[in-house]
Image 1 (cartoon, chains in turn cyan, green):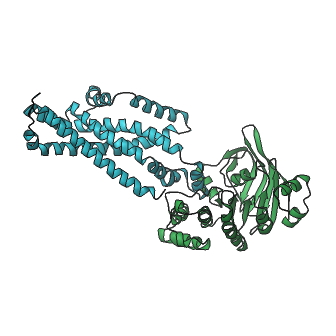
Image 2 (cartoon, chains in turn red, blue; image 1 turned 90 degrees about the horizontal axis):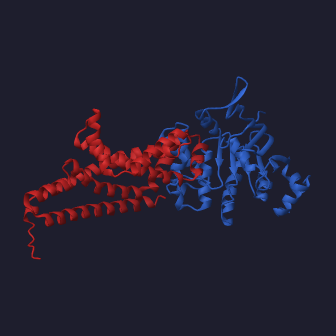
Image 3 (tube, helix red, strand yellow; image 1 turned 60 degrees about the horizontal axis):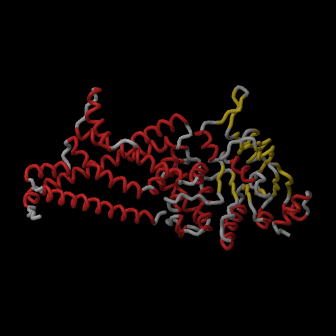
Length: 220
Length: 255
């Protein structure tokens, strides 16, 4: 083996990679935000006493969780236009990721909801709060707090999943890395640098989340 | 004088199991009534029916003359919508065995929540009312502490302040000292005694026989879902009429 490493073409395009990393992080952030809303609503559906509501929520969760995420992306980008529903690449990718995150977070939130003692709801009722007020002021804050570590993990895996956007040519980190590959043929170097960028980003996110959790932990 | 609480013919079942089998009870303003009895006698369930934390299948409960929880329409008994029930619940205040403070809010936040959302107070006003009551239960020094930073006795005092700050017609205490370490019981009982001296109308479920004896204007002994004996605490504790009450008091080591 006598491969001579040459990182120069990668350094020359390093700003493109950083730009792609930024896009990836933005896509993940947007998707987790929408995913949290979807997951929250669906989680309340899962624990609902109303049978049809619980059934529909359960169907959504088990269907989405049991198909590969790439399929959801392809469905959004290639299948929906056949039905006359057309989104931009970015929109359909964020939609796919949000729907996917929503299903996973719904399960996480369901666990969080079921772990909240009945006494919390009763204490809210006892001071005359209406059901929606109890949900907004007591149940949802407690649920988000207890599931924060799982949400952090969901965000990290979602960020890694943004690399799948390359499959529908959304310009993010993996997409640009492939582009550099094609232009420079420095394949090993490109993937080493790209991997390190992913690792650095996820490591930073994880550390920030741990810091954030520690701050909230005092209040529990 | 009008009754603050008027219960007639209350019946409550869990499925086929009837746990309250026709209870009548009336309380005048300023009265302090303690409910005693062995576990499973229905005393906590009775308290929870008054605060509509439980459904009940028969009988009426009136608080300050207002019929709560249900109405009769076309001769049928129907549950009031949840909005109305929330208003009904605000007529009474409840302190729980497990305190049930909201862990994500400070002591002050726990007390102001209901004042703001239910009573519609502005923030400043709610804080002023909450601070007054936290002071009253001796917790103003720790108003910015979170529940986890407080002892059981302190948490229970905040929980009592939270309930009473709502200015309820009637305070309900559900075994409020049962979850406390023995050395923390008295600080909570002192708060309740203080409120009783102040003329608060209170209904307590308790296992603290000495306290029931000392604080109550009337004691109720429940057994198998009915009121088995009721009366003046001195009379009840020193000359129990029924064999069962005598046995119960003997076991509770009141004598």
